[in-house]
Image (cartoon, rainbow, N blue to C red; front, side):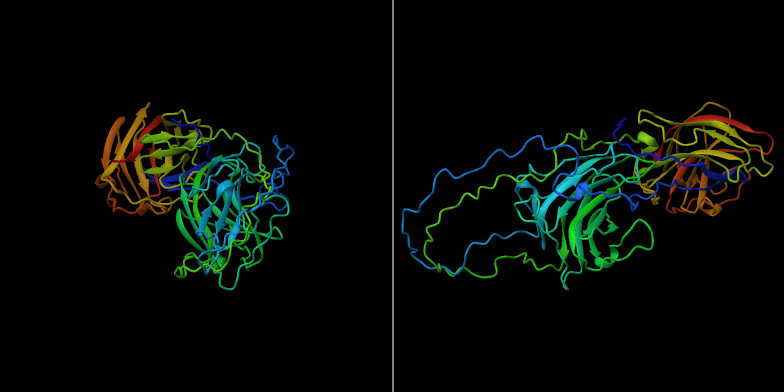
Length: 499
């Protein structure tokens, strides 16, 4: 098992609760609260990532030692005159997104040095620490790393939008959208399913953001708001900007690992002409030889103010096992993935389950295990379960759905008691809608359950409806209760995935 997935959650105060009516798990899923995936406290001044002058306490261990004085004066010894005349001078042109040597980037109407930062929360990391080693042949800007468990943790890949190529203090200015600029074009590749936001930083420090999807995003200005992780933010209204940032937010309960690449971003409907060849070559030169040789500018490689550090973070290219448990209880289960959890009925009838969650899992585990007791109830209301979400990104609170693409479900359980076990699949509203949860009885060991065997009432005497390929949000193993006695249980889920 890989241990570099540092994401986990812990449900505070109460576990995910479910109710079982007539022996089937009536489940009310209460997603964990990860807090705001963004530094939302107004007292935090994250100034370090946004300036190329060092604000941290450490000093650059290497300073520029070259005065770079020209040792000779070059004089043009020839009085060359052009044998033909010409109509134009050679002016460098750039693609809409053009990465230069040393990390200077042309991005439509924007131009400046790119940078990366793990924020100011100890324990967070990002690689590379800067882009000073770029050769100019690159077509993407990629970063990866891990954020500590903290609401204020952030990982950032940013661009100074109006900066001279010399860099250094005083080289940065602001950029204001024109009347023609309608928004921002962003193309990213997410190598991990983490939240990535586009954030604009104003000249006065105000920040506007919006969440990005994997691939191409056309973001109108009106979609960028302050406090974009909650309702009520103020829209961006073409205020002057100093930086544009791709930001991965952290969370107080989960260490977030990230890995993404910026393929392109720039203002939509900018003034930059992407096709510089606007005319034909007339074959006529317009002037004589100026007699000026190429001049040594005396400018050494710019110190961007970012210290290079070894983050110790490798890009995760893991191919996961069919059932792979990660740090904090995040599970890869074939084509499914999401956080695992435990639960009992709600309101409680006295059933118990241990552990309360899987937040302490290290990633070495090969099974999800639980034990406890299902309370006796005249209406068969007691239940206990191990489950996981089927479409949830690491570090995210949102729980999506999946539509089955195969014929059934493979289950492997180790049952250490005589308690009956069932496998249950359910839609997003399955916790409260009995018509949107389907179960099937299982035995100890391995088995493949066809989707056609799932029913809303899978117990003896049940008269439910067969599963109808409704998109699913969660899968679980449940212990149904009894009306005559409490049911002790102790079992492990070794594997559960589509097959």
